[in-house]
Amino acid sequence: MPIQFTNVAKAQITQALLSALLERGGYRVTRLGIEELFGEIKYLDLPEYMALNLPLKLRYLPDLLVADLEMKNAYLVEVKFRRSFDEISASLLHEKLKEQREHWPESYAVIMIAESFVPEGKFHQDYIRVVSPGQTDMLVNANLSPEKRWEDLPQIYHVFKNLWETSLLYAADSITPALRDLAKLQDRL
Image (cartoon, one colour):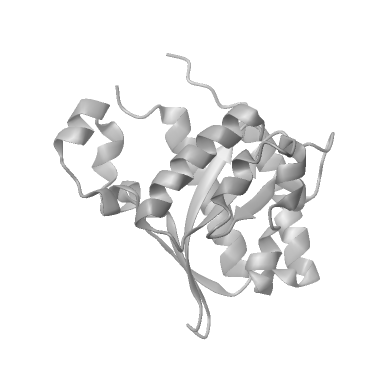
């Protein structure tokens, strides 16, 4: 069965939201990822996809290439959306990112969630966090609750420093309703 429509939609929406935010902050953003480079694979079922025998490095290519305007710093960024950040989703994220980082160890992951730990949360930091290179195991630290793990992950402007400007933080806050609404997308097949 091909990738579910809602999963494709959620991925494209979260990538677009992050791209728009980073571009507003003065970053150059190029979409990468196997789904971007070879869009037809979204319509393949798993056996068909596996039959392509794509190199693992290509299959695990992060979603975005982000560079500052001066082209002095560049980041490979994977974008992950989850309904919530609980034990199960954190464990599954860890598994996926660990696989990816075997091929792209210097990549970052931006995690966006629909259900914040803060009831009626309205700030971007309630919904968006970054997993920097070398931090993947923080996702499954059994000594900490999922909420504490989330709190310990860097906020987006800690990694992408251009976003620190106040007006950009307000722009980041404006995408939180869209993230909450993504949880409502469900396949009806």
